Amino acid sequence: MDELSIYLHIPFCVRKCLYCDFLSFPVCGDGNTAENKHTGKSYVNLISPQKAAWVESYVNLIRDEIIRTAPEYKKYRVISVFVGGGTPSLLPTGAMRAILDAVRSGYRLEEDAEITLEMNPDTVTEEKLREYITCGINRLSIGLQSADDAELARIGRIHDYGTFAQAYETARRVGFANINIDLMAALPGQTIAAYGRTLRRVAALAPEHISAYSLTLEESTPLYERRREFSFPPEEEEREMYALTGTYLASCGYHRYEISNYARDGFECRHNKVYWRRGNYVGFGLGASSMTENVRWKNPTDGERYRNYVDALARAAEAGGSAGLREKNAEEFALQRLSVPEQMEEFMFLGLRMMRGVSGRTFRRVFGADMEETYGAVIGKLCGQGLLERDGERVRLTERGIDLSNYVMAQFLFD
Image 1 (cartoon, rainbow, N blue to C red):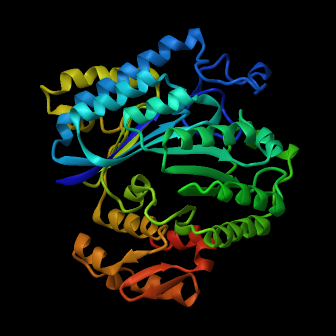
Image 2: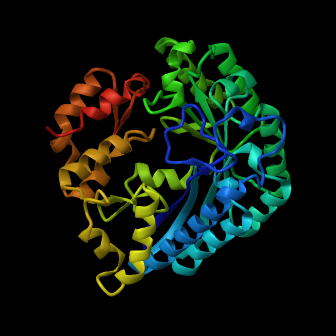
Image 3: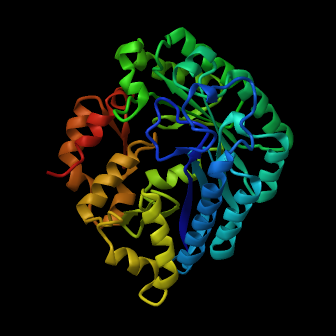
C-alpha cells in the first residue's frame, strides 16, 4: 500500500508570540494584553469560558472532516501523524483523544506510526502528559526557542526556561523517549555567546532531536512593527550561530540531516521527511495543506468557510466524494495539479534541503528522465561555484551552499 502522513491543525494558543504569523488564535482571556503576561501560574486548562464553545465546536469539525474524507484514502497506510498549531497542548486530553480516535477509525494507522504533538511548556501537567501516552502520542516537539529568559520575553513567549525544564523532566519521567526541542537564532538582542549557552543547556538535556531555525521577521507580525526598538544580530553573526549549531551539536552526537534539523541516530523526524521527499500527506483543520498524487490544495482559512466545507462533506459522498467537492471548488481550495516540470523543481529544491541531497537514480525512476540531462548545466555551474558537490549519482549542498541555499534552490526553477 502507498504511504500517507497526516497533519492536524489546532489553531489555538494562549497568546500570539510577537514573531508569529501562523494561522492561530488566542483563547485564554483576550490573548494579547498585559494581563496575559506570564506571572508564574500555569496556563493549563485556562481556555476562557467565552472561547470554550468555539474550541469544542472546532474539535467536532475536525473530527467530522477526518471521518468524512476517510474513504478517499483507503489505499494508504498512515506512517506519521503530526499535531501542530497554534498550541495543540492547550486542548483538553479528552478532545485530543477524540481527534486521534477519529484518525484510527477511518485510516490504516501503522502500529509503529510516529505520532507527534507540538507542546508549549506552560500548558501541560504530569497527568496530561500521561494521558497523551495513552492516546498513542509517542513524540513531543517542545517549543523552547531560547534558554535565556530575557530573550524569551523579547519575542513574547509565555514561559521561562525553568518552566520548560520542569516540563521536559516531567515528560521524561512519564515515559516519552522521543522529544524534539525547537530553538531560534538571530533573536533580538541575542549574541553569539548567549546563543552558545542555549545550545549547551539544551544539548545537556540529551533530547533525541533538535530543530534550530533563524528568526524570520514577517511583515504581518508585531515584532516586525516594533523592529526599530530592538538590535538584531547582523547577518555575519547569524551565519556564525548557524555554523556553531552544526559543529557543537555534532560534538554532542547529533547529525544534521536537513538544513535546520539535527538528530541522534534513529530519531530523524519521519513526518517532516515526507514533505522534503514529496511524499503524500493530507492536512485536516483550518488552513491545513495537503498533497497527494501531485495534487496540492489548502483548506479554507476562514472559520465560517471551513465550517461550510465540513458540512458539505456530508453531502459529497453522493457527488464524487471529498475529492470531487474540491475539484468543483478548485479556486477556493487553491487546488493545483502539478505539471512534470513543477514536480521536478520541487524534487530538487526540497530534496536538496536534506544533507544526503538528491539521487539521480530516484529522479530517473520518478520522472523517466535523466537528472544530468535535465539539470546538468545548472548542477555544473553550482558545483563550479562551490555550492553543490557530486557524490556518485547523488548531488548535495556544500557548507557554502547551505549558507546560500535560497540562491541555490532558485536555480532549479524553469523559466
